[in-house]
Length: 377
Image (cartoon, rainbow, N blue to C red; front, side):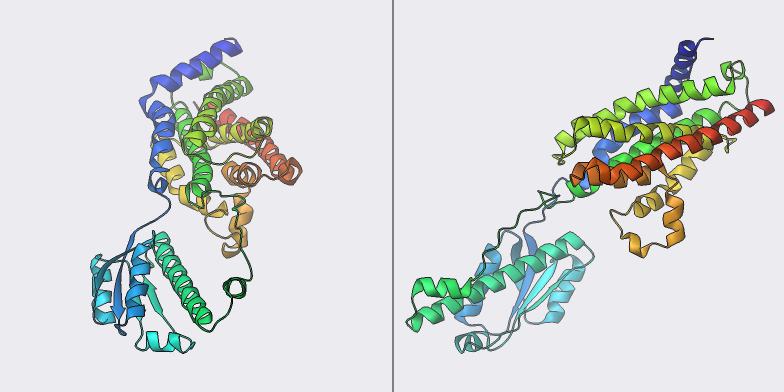
């Protein structure tokens, strides 16, 4: 059997096996829509709040109107005390509260400090952040407006008042996340993890189902079998990777800052090392259901030790050292730097070198693992 015939046999084995075909083809396409779905409406607006107005003055009512006019907030009720507001938040009728203290108008007119109380449902970070940010923005704007009116009433020039109240003009330009949303932040890393895990599961099922029965894999050498399997899986996942980094990035408007050649160079050892890892790890399983169970179980730990959704400083050092053996961890860290942050090739070259080291490591493990399995069959 020639190498090309062996590759063709491997491809037929993959597409004719329903479990593998669904995992590889169905899983990659399904998760390309499932994972980004929660982040499509990534900027929370019109968050419902309740107000406790203890002042009942013209200025407090004007402040409430300004809060309700904010694109981030929506006033749903005005209650008498914080206990009522907490009950509404607990029921889900509101997500935040605003307390305007007694003497609000009097203290402002006297140019004295006023303390406003804000609160929000911290179970949802984006909602909580939107409420607090919206209320703080309204508070600052209203305070500045009242101060401006007071200074103008004292006879100061309008230009001088503007300059005194706004001495610094902030021009904020997001560097690595132009939309300030979760899509550009979460999706790139998660899609790489999907490629990694589905490839491990598919390769694991393929190997685990063959070691205890006879087939073409018994009539070829160990190294040709490994090379043909890796070449077949690598070819398939080159198409999947192109789909993710091409169509999905464009569809979800994920920022792209790396050059195409750099992306290809960096992802080549990622695909090779993951394919070889799937062959090597498949030798540990004797049942076809085991790879799916094991690799799905370790998906979340891999996501956390990748360092982009949880600080590495809060993860035990032994776990970080162990994670350096996982191709997805190195690839996620490298691609986020290269493609999302615009890092130079020199800065991610050590990660690229580590991936090639994993290629050599898993090739060695795959060779001895497959040799042992074939000798027992």
